[in-house]
Image (cartoon, rainbow over all chains, first blue to last red; front, top):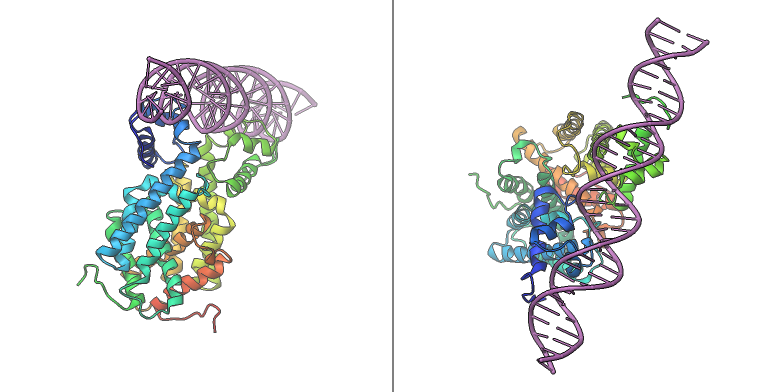
Length: 202
Length: 202
DNA sequence: AGCATAACTAGACGCTGACAAGATGGCGGG
DNA sequence: CCCGCCATCTTGTCAGCGTCTAGTTATGCT
């Protein structure tokens, strides 16, 4: 886990952050190992020593992403255990780390069976479900049905994030996606639970 | 539009369908123009005459996809103008044409400014919003707010489709995604509108 | 001090997308 | 009828990519 300083310093982490930045800028398909090596000022084969192959690098990137997401979701839950705010946290993560987020849900790009990745993904899923379990709202649904509502909520916020990132929405939601999501998610969630966190309107 | 028969027959369409199949099998990143040409039994540079470049082929594929989606949504609306069934149609399309669907929302892969593509995308969006406008339900929301609910519904079904396709869901929903979605979407939509289409349960 | 080894370099291979220049064949104007 | 035109397709070429192999440098342990 802990990386010492070697010739470069910490090439592994430099490559990962450079990759996240490059993907956020110009998409994952135009990412090149050799270009990453160039940015880091090392030879074209140097990355191969830290990551078995390109999929290995993306596996590490996705793993980091799931860990960060799990942490963010856990923090959000403690701050204000609101289903709506949990969704906003999810969206904020997708926007702030769009390169990493893009890779996380492209299982064809990395080694999906990697144990570290699976563990991190599970931890993020647990954080998500945990945040939904002790909802401040939704007293109307039985415990069994919580799972269904959780899938619906996850689907909605994930779909909103991906659609917005791909520019599929009309400009209405393009200005401030977080605020737009707060209104949209809030409308469904509050109607569902009968509890009104009152996003902002009177 | 209409393609005559030439040396190959109809290479353009053959390439597009082969591309959709190949992407559905092994992802868009492992798609190769040369492999497509090999499958069609032509030389490696033949595709270049029908599509300016790889992005051009994917642009055409996405355009076809949006046209098909618009058609499917329109048909669904006529068959049973239910918001739930419209969502199911959307999901069915994503599952049946997962290769095409994957490309449609990856704007970094194709020429996003292509006029034909923009027109097809707009037509699909219109079909989606039209299907939501004359809902059988949702009498509680004002006409302005229909747009917000539409975005929420679109986000939810889109998110469900992409999450399922990426294998992110626990196995619970993995068996029959359409039925699972019917339950999940129905739970939110019916609670929202106060109308119960009663998916299947007693 | 010396050495095993992690970290990196240099070179090569087959593959890819893209470009240029030549071959092939159907169709309309003479 | 046939002849030239042009869309279609082929062959050849190029730089760049991911990956493999072999060789080089520098670090930390004994």
